[in-house]
Image 1 (cartoon, rainbow, N blue to C red):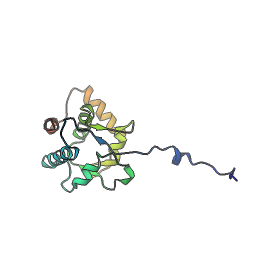
Image 2: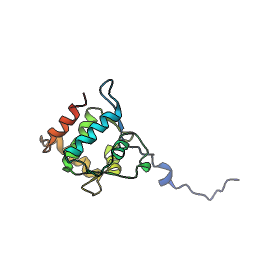
Image 3: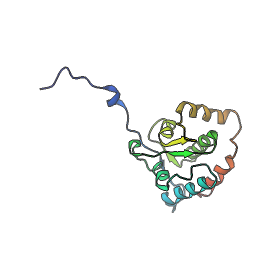
Image 4: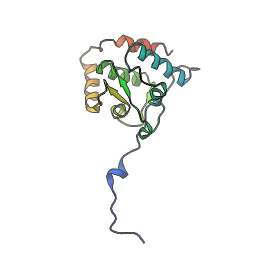
Length: 151
């Protein structure tokens, strides 16, 4: 017998399962883990992510895992504009695939900026300003060099 007085909790039933980004290698023969490891090393070398970030934590951000299974966030220590630029370039070059419509919500669940939470709305604003103000963030060349080495 069905309990006719039972109500559905729409908040719990309609929320989509969110996943981390999925890394897509752009060069034949390259292995995903090798590319992610090289980016990880370069970001630490240039002091863009916290040196305490474990390699596995960084790689999990790009393995398409359910976000509820990601226990530690990556602390971005570079400028906020550079973080947004980094993800804009990854997306533009089709290195990452996001299973959600909003990559900034995914970013919020995976990254911190100088140990502070990230606001997806601010990410979207900064992203739109990157392309309307005609100025790349300071140190954008670092990101370009890191990505160029993947080919």
